Amino acid sequence: MASASPITAADAGLPDYVTRQPSGFYRSANPGTKLAVAALEVVAAFVLPGWVGPLLVLAVVLATAAMARRMRGLAAIALATSPIVGSILVINLFLLPGASDPIARLGPLAPTWSGLSFGLQTVARLLAFSLAIGLVYLTTAVDDLLADLARRGLGRRVIFVVGAAVQMVPATIERAGEIVDAQRSRGMDTEGRIWRRARGVLPLAAPVVFGALTEVEERTMALEARAFTAPGRQTLLRVPADRPKHRVVRWAAIIALIAMVVLRATGRLV
Amino acid sequence: MSVGIRLDGVSYRYAGAAATSLRNVGLELEPGRVVGVVGANESGKSTLCLVVAGLAPAVIGGRLEGSVRIDGIETAAMRPHDLAQRCGLLSQNAATQLSGTTATVFEEVGFGPCNLGLPVADVVQRVWAALGAVGIESLAPRDPARLSGGQGQLVAIASILALRPRYLVLDEPTSELDPAGTKLVAEALARIARDTGAGILLVEHKTDVLAQIADEVVVLERGAVAFSGPAAAVLADPRLVELGVESPAAVRLERAVRTSGLEWSAALAKALS
Image (tube, each protein chain N blue to C red):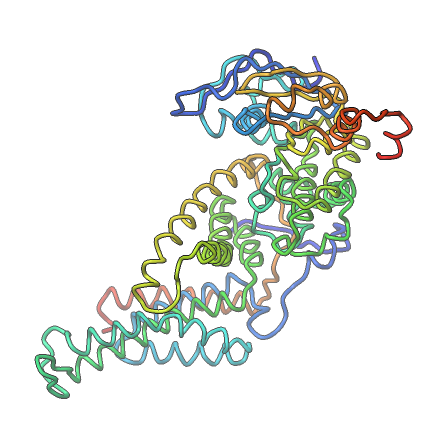
């Protein structure tokens, strides 16, 4: 792990808004610690058998979100997963291979109890996965995460890719909105029935995708013009706090994660 | 060692392109001078910027003939981050000029110096100097993603200045700006040329901006230099219009006055300016 001397506004002349540190429960935790905890939660949701893993993770994530006052954001993430949640439930309810305990007969279809159980369990795992990652996103400023990754010696290219990818989401949504408005002003009907909406996807997708590709070249040149490929270590203007308790939690999460994977791989966690 | 940017017999063709985008271009830019470049669409202005800044062909590929030297050194012999410290390039779209990974304008302007691995105190000093040169110190705490077009372009200029290049290559920096934003950028460029002694190559459709700050103007036509000379003379040249470039408002007004049979006097010109 790369070392970095702590920087204070006093000794470097940095303004307070650069050296700022996040405050509040979980929000002030070190980004690396939050990533490690999220990784543990994701692995636990899928590795721990039956209902225990996903329900335990969901309980922890929801309690943390409530204390960090991020329940509304988490609800939005849960809502965003609803299309895939719905399809998982429907497919397992009716089409789980080998299921022979029908709940009822609906013509040629027969929903099964084991299909319902497996579908709900899969949904719980999916939600645990989405919400664990979502909680990191909701409680961590992107530049805090990038600064912490840089401090840990991750290459500037990787860091830039992560940062640009995260920042690209709102930018792409904004661009898509502008293109929809432009297409509407030229008479395209993007409201109403599903087939009408579907017909509007291609004229929206093409400019969004091609516009993004064009931007990549411009950005590449802009980065070159700002010495992005200079050799050596990048200077860090701000280092997120990493208190002893954060380090303890991080290492505990990493050890638990490794232990869980090893136990599962050796067949002692079935 | 010769000082300045010097292009001799430069021709450039993009990778995979059938036609040559620049043909036998010669150009000189000295520190402290502002050279404007005008021309119709697809006359090679943006390509010229990429070639002068050394990004073509080093980053985008293609085939370059002739010599491009910055302070006597061939750009082909320099690495991109070395070039960035000698010659800063800014394109017209401020949104793609910013890194998109910083939370404040201060950190955005510091992105380049941080890439060089400079000590924090040096980065801080460079950032304040660059913000001051452009006159936007008050924007330092702001989120770069939440700026107006003019402010964003000024931040992009400051970001380039923080690398302390001796030359700036600006490709239509005011093209997406309203009159207020254009005025902000034009004033900032005039201040930079005056105070920092940087040589500026400014591609600009708005010839009024060039009339204010350019010492010389080069007119491009289909990738070649059509004519060039002192800014006042070139911008008043009637051939500009034939080449698809609008003359500055003052020149058009003078022509209109003369065409209508009225007398154009120095006093009138001064009053109107």
